[in-house]
Image (tube, rainbow, N blue to C red; front, top):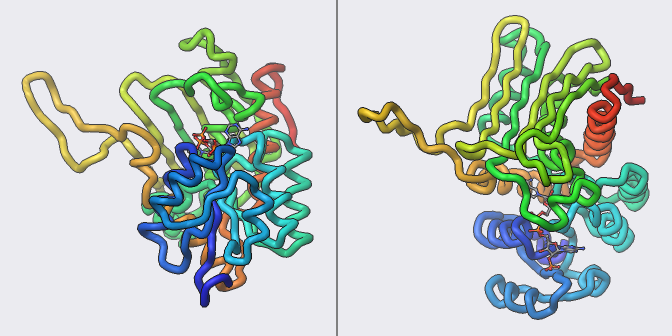
Length: 335
Ligand SMILES: NC(=O)c1ccc[n+]([C@@H]2O[C@H](COP(=O)([O-])OP(=O)(O)OC[C@H]3O[C@@H](n4cnc5c(N)ncnc54)[C@H](OP(=O)(O)O)[C@@H]3O)[C@@H](O)[C@H]2O)c1
C-alpha cells in the first residue's frame, strides 16, 4: 500500500465520470487518496490536480510507474477500456473500470484473463447494485422470506439520447443495449442468481430518427434454469430519467422505483406532481461512493471484488446477443 494502509488511486479520463470520481475520492472515501490524474491534455490534468492536490500526467505508463499508485480508476470511453485494463494490470495495479467492460468481447476476455494472471483485482462499475434500495432488495430476496426469485423486470429510460460524439456511436459505446440496458442485464443475473442463456429482443428507431442506433429495445432473457427477465430501455423519456426494477418471487414481490427525487408531492388544481431525478449522477451518488469503497476494501482485505470481470463479460455477451436478436428477429443462444 502506498501510504500506510491507504490505497493510492489514479483516475484516467477527465470527463463526466472521471471528474465525479475525483471529487468522491477526495471528499468521501476514507481508506484511499487521489495520487494522480491522467488526461490526454497535460494542462487539463494540471488544472484538476491543483484542486485535488495530486500529480498530473498525460501518459498512463508514467503514472503507472509511480509507487504511490496502487490502483487505477478507468473513466474513459467504453471502447478504450480493455486496452487500459491490460496496461494497468501489467504494472501490477488493481483496476476499477467503468461499465461496460468494453465493446469488444475478445479484447475484454483478454483483459480479464490478464488481470487473473497478474493477480490484480478487477471491479466493473455496475453501480446500481451498491445503491441502498437495490442492495436492500438483494438482502430481502436472498433471505428467502419471499420464496424463490422467479422474474426480474427492469426499465431504464434516459431523458435524452447521448450528444454527438463517441457515446452516440454504438460501435464505440455499445449503444442503447450495452451502454444503458446492460445495468438491467447485470441486475437480472444478480437477483435471479443465474446466467442468461438465450435472448429474444425487438426494437427500433421510433422517436429519434437520426440516432444511428435503436432508441427503444425490449428483451426477454431466459436463464439457464428456465427463469426469465424482461428488460426494456429507451433513449427518450419526456418526463426525465426513469429507472425501475421489480423482482417477482414465489411469495411476494420487491419493487424498486425512482420516480420521486424527494418524498414530496405538490397537489394543486392542476393535479398532483412529484419532482423526478434529473439525471443519473444525482440518483446514484451514494452508489458511486459505495462501489469505490467496496473496491478499496477488496484490495485491503484481499477479497474478490463485488462485480467481477467474469460477470461483466457475461453481461457483454448478453448485450451482443440482444443486438443480434433485434437485427435477425430470432432468439439467440449464448454459450
Ligand atoms: N456507471 C454509470 O452510471 C455511468 C454513467 C455515465 C458513464 N459511464 C461510463 O463511464 C465511461 C466514461 O463516460 P463519460 O460519460 O465520463 O465520458 P466522457 O464525459 O466523454 O469522458 C471520457 C473522458 O475520457 C478521456 N478520453 C481518453 N481517451 C479518449 C478518447 N479516445 N476519446 C474521448 N475521450 C477520451 C477524456 O478525458 P481527457 O481528455 O482528459 O483524456 C474524456 O473526457 C464510459 O464507459 C461510460 O459508459 C458510467
